[in-house]
Length: 557
Image (cartoon, rainbow, N blue to C red; front, side, top):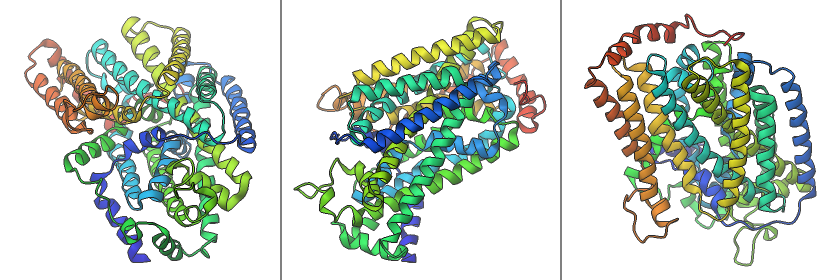
């Protein structure tokens, strides 16, 4: 047994470059959906969660009086709390249902996904988190534009952030609608409107404080629920993991082959390209980066990533265990199979069926409610990041040139949240029957191709100039969008053409290369006065990023 687990672990680590994790989120919400009977217990538990979080939002609204409170909860979140909130922001329902469903269907392939998802965190931990906290206040654009022309770089950063947020929001809203059909038996449109309204309420009235605690509660519920589900499943095997694995091998149609990578993981160029998106994408996701400004100092920022890495890693271990348990407990139970022997509702229902098999209807309701609550936590973080890009970067810094009052900035942010909510609902309804799997990959790819190169180079390369950052960032944005539109995901699957113009589904290798090389080229060839100022500002930026001298304190940032 130990050898088998070691094989899985080593295969997962070795296969990190072959992880297709980003698309797992999309695949988890883009498969065939079969509306289930109305689940009264799940609806009741979900209503209880919503009422509790609305009460939390009221409490938070009484404590949100300044822009610092609204954007970053006053910088008063501890490293442990922020680690839980980051995990809550990151552990999506698609990850929970998609990873367990992939392990149920393909065995060790699902492990590759989990490795791909978590491999980006050390990048943030060791290279970016502390420097972000020392240099920034509310958004990552504060850092990216620190020594550059504020108007150009903030405009670019805000555009990159909004593009990522909108694509990610569409995927989450469509996923919410489909999950509601799967878990609660309610109509798609009701789910999309409900998620949009709750998202606006959380962010508009409670700001970052309410969003943080919604994410913390969701993370605790999800980790607790998955832990109970694994323990109840292990009880079927006498709490013997060896017996669980042997039973999974015996009962899966592929037998021992579930411990080996499938042939679908065979294109090295696409695998490397996606691995780059997965490793660098999280370091460019605006709603994740924003969380590092909610802690008091750089030490707490480092701790928060440490805790988040542990929580996310633990979550994926549980998801893998759930998948292997479901092979025996669900896959051999006729109650959960159709006449063809396939699992009812599709492979992504493995965890849901397992919860009913080991815990009855009440536990099924709890797990269903938790799965849906995860979406609320993610969309709230996205909406706040998007609204902050509009109010803090575009309105306060670009349009008002830093002369906007705190009251004006918060009003614009709340209006932007409302607009984003309406937009998310509308696009969620429009894209109901569209294949939106590419949008999750696109969001990661854009974050890796636009936000990450500009942010990374601005922190670590002293010769980067405003011109290089602006042109390189835009070329990264344009190339990423072009690769997706001209590639198989949109050109063939959505637009219906026979062959794609760009042959690869994974494109980050190309778009990131364009972004980084363009930033370098247009910086080293820049002889302007602005370039001299940009380079001269690196020394002060470096000292502050390493020491925290002059960094905004928790009380006034």
